[in-house]
Image (tube, rainbow, N blue to C red; front, side, top):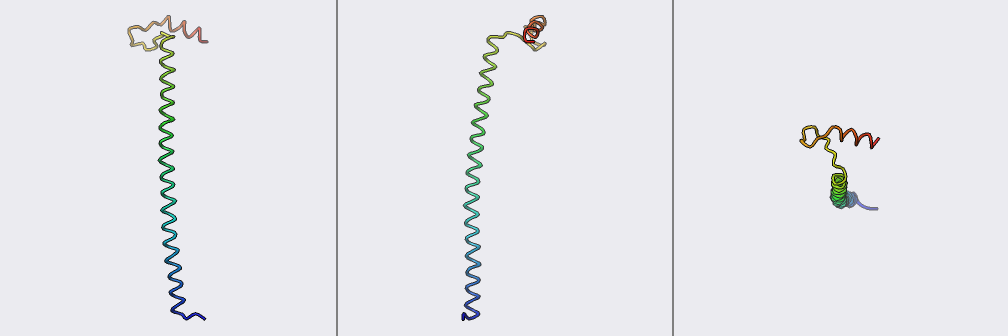
Length: 90
């Protein structure tokens, strides 16, 4: 049978080994999570930029074909053209 001091050394060694393993495992998981979070943020930014570019292209395309000014403060505003445009769209 194993003596009491040897058993105590084995127990504390196992406890210390478990703590070190848990610490290193948590660090590896945290590093992977951080890398995934950074990658996700980068892809989200790319998606938003692509979406903004598409919206800008649609806006520019609609400006060229449709010369309706909807801002009443603009000197080029024409209410009759706006009503005709709405009637045509409806």
